[in-house]
Amino acid sequence: MPRVDAGTERPGAESCEGTWEGPMANGGGEDARERLLGVLLDKVAQDLYPSSTMLDVIEKLLEPDEIDAYAAILCEKIADEMYPSTSMINRLVALTG
Image (cartoon, rainbow, N blue to C red; front, side, top):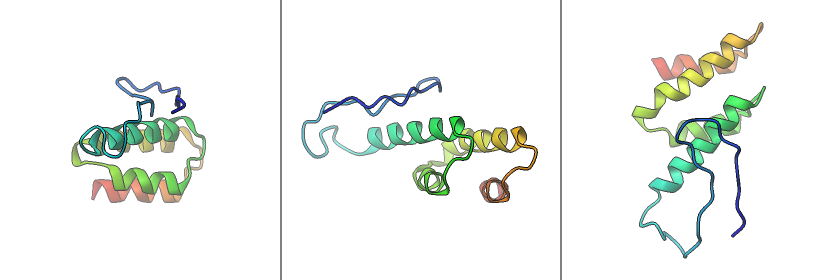
């Protein structure tokens, strides 16, 4: 399987790299969920205008203890823009309420 490298900057982030040994080779989907979430969070942090689809997927994958990290990324994006996206503001409000 070819290596996919997301060029991650987040501490502890992993690429989607792995050795394919068949379905559920790792005994479950938790490692894959964590890797996918890490890649998507990195992309959102790097993209000027992250897609709503990517944000929707992140929100489906988030565990309660990961919400603060995601909220921090959204908050930083909002703070960096002169005219921040209202949909991004609404996502952050929904996470905090």
